Length: 158
Image 1: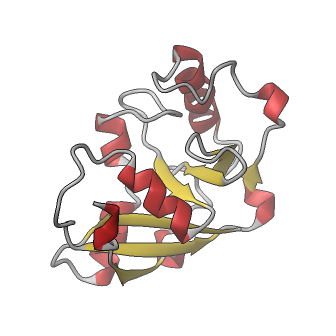
Image 2: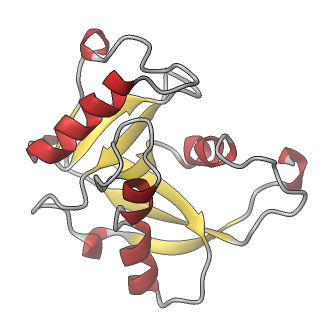
């Protein structure tokens, strides 16, 4: 599965930018829907357009001028992904206020080391997919990350 991640552009060389974008440090400091504080995770999307929407829902207020951004692409073999059936997801996993059970579900996956990525529906468009990557999994290789490539938010989104 090909996944995409958008990040702020920096002046770092490509390898250092990928290391920073795929370290999981941000999610460990600021927990997301699928991880608890202190647990590294890298949030990616199944398409670049969903990655854009996922980025926009977390920017408040939306700036009139978007910061310089880049995107990365990572191809993950399907046998290194886990995709639970929707019936196995916690109740209200897509609620605006993230339920404790959702973070516990993702945290248990990340700590288990069962797979490189957890494929889950995105709360923004539940028919689309996000992939929560475990950057500590022994089969995750930042060397496989392609990018950074320039990304520009259309000004009409502001």
